[in-house]
Image (cartoon, rainbow, N blue to C red; front, side):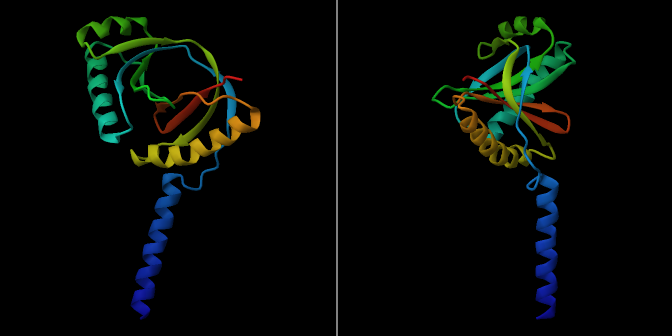
Length: 171
């Protein structure tokens, strides 16, 4: 019986440590700030299959780095309606627009500077996107409702060990 209690305590402790590591207990603070502008190259994707997001991200990273782009970051935009989501990269160089001729599924969009609700969440591994979404979406919804903002598309920018979540502000 004592061994079962010890095993149970070890398992619970391990799960608690993993939850802390994954950011389950991180406090989410929403700020309003201006972000952008961005040159955005992307592919459209229906749904939110993480494997498909990973596949598109890997393909585009390879394409961009093979074409000499070094200052890039994954940028994904998710829509609230039936529009396909945009999975891609932002770059600080307008040359990215020329790359879309290499693949008929690639698209380019210039995202101007805009006022957004933003927050960060720690990136530990791909599971961070799921944990972050659960925590951040609830916080963005509450903030949006409190301030009377309309629901709009939401985006993520992967910045090294942080995920920047943003949602444009439309009063």
